[in-house]
Image (cartoon, rainbow, N blue to C red; front, top):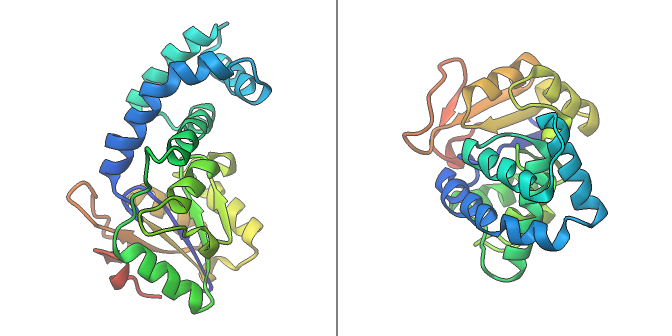
Length: 224
């Protein structure tokens, strides 16, 4: 029996286009201004130090901005990039310049599963703060009360089995009591190797079907 559901965001609860056509460009266009004003503060400085470590060279904040802009273009799953994007998006959401996209069926089924006693968690390459923002400022209202926890790349890469074992250890459920939802087959493979149940969301043509996993075109077809 499924007692907990762990869901991806991009292509699963929310549109891939929203992330790539709204969130990423917003972060890129506001990055330099944000760093100019905030690079001296400890939290931002720590992330810039990590950028320099990953690049294995000394960087000014302007140099770091060049690297981060390139990483945005490459859609790098780098923790300091995701953290800084989250900080920039927070300002955009609070200013009313951003609204988190969710598919129409997402809030309906998240609420239904929550009311049925299922524990809901998010696992995304975006930072925990970015995850909380997209659901907290969603176009369906504040959905954050539905979730029991959030996981990002600090728990491990999404295509590595150990990451899902780490999640299982933290949430305290047996692997076969947990369902992982994603549009990415390699992520589902890793979750299944950790013992989780899986379901692949095929919401648009960008999703590549993996025959090894059950499929659903939206949350109404997800079988618990």
